[in-house]
Image (cartoon, rainbow, N blue to C red; front, side, top):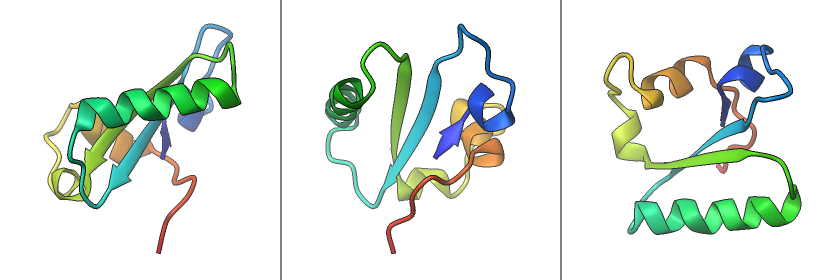
Length: 82
């Protein structure tokens, strides 16, 4: 899911790309974020990419005002696994 300034169409030359990945289960959230950032860095070197990872269960009732809340509210789905 793309969120933040790029999702809103408000990006500037200083903007990074904000991506949220929602997985059914996440054993090690921090390790998964590091793994995905490394992979994204190989695909788009020099582009600032911020990747957040959440298990599906935490996305069901996000706290208003949190990053998770805003990402789910304004985000654009890039890929959905069925």
